[in-house]
Image (cartoon, rainbow, N blue to C red; front, top):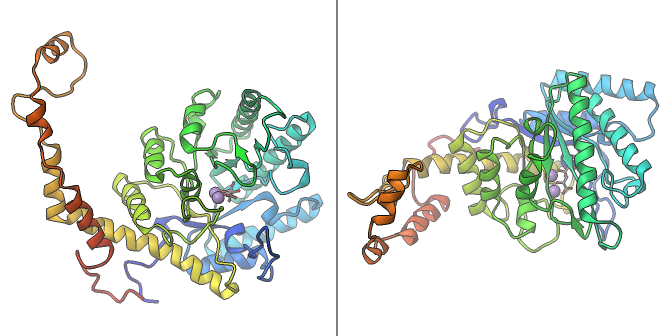
Length: 398
Ligand code: GCO
Ligand code: MN
Ligand code: MN
């Protein structure tokens, strides 16, 4: 492939989970369609497609019942493969949803033994990630939810989750692991309802933690879309709060099952505004593709899927640059937000300003008449997205 605008490079911090490129196409209605690929070979695949990092759950790499000796050998070999392939382990997590013990949740379970086991599994996953050099630890409350609220009071579940996260933060400090903990929200699936259904819900919760500074969020495109929400607004709130520690990029049609499609494949316009936001603000944490190939693909097709995720990101990044450089777009943006001479503006509170503001007579008719040419603005955006406007890439786009 030619080295061009759409070639992934380490500075893009593109990463894939072992469970994403290793997804075998199992769904609730059908069994696996792709043969298993070993973690070390998945790392080779990640290197081959040009990504920077790999993410994993504890049991994506180390079987849940592995002996200590096997565990150490597996981790050693994985570390070697990553080093040889130039792939960074960027994020780790514990699988707190697959084993039947977690069928009613992990940290929020009513059973104290389940909660303690979930914590033990998490601490071990933190040890594992630290050994591999990971700096982000994701907590996704996979089964932290209900089908019926008869089973427990939701505020008790919330308090249990707080206790667990506070413990995790203390362990992080005690071991000097330097993790940034990223909480990932999802509205439902696999449970009927999940506690903390949205990124915004987690942002509200973080302030109640003992080590709030250590904890941020990991918004996922599909999860906000499943709830019918605007992912860019959620991401912007996280960014603005200094909490955008990680991001799960994929795609999802609103109202459907948890699809995990290739990034930007279902809603390219929403993906465009997301990429534009991340690039405009200078987001520099990992860009993780938490998605998987269509069930119709074989293992070769998984590479097409992975390359497509990164390519779409980079194409949209280039489109965002075109958008920012477009004179007509910039003119409209300036026009719609310019201040009016003599009309008060919002300032920091001062008695004198409040007095002036209260005394001023706003001409609602005149102010309300300002043209807001959003049809034109959006059409210019669509023209850029559809490739009939804006800088044309002169290099072969491979
Ligand atoms: C999902 C989630 C997971 C998490 C992963 C990392 O919908 O299944 O997005 O893929 O991101 O478990 O904690
Ligand atoms: Mn998901
Ligand atoms: Mn995810």
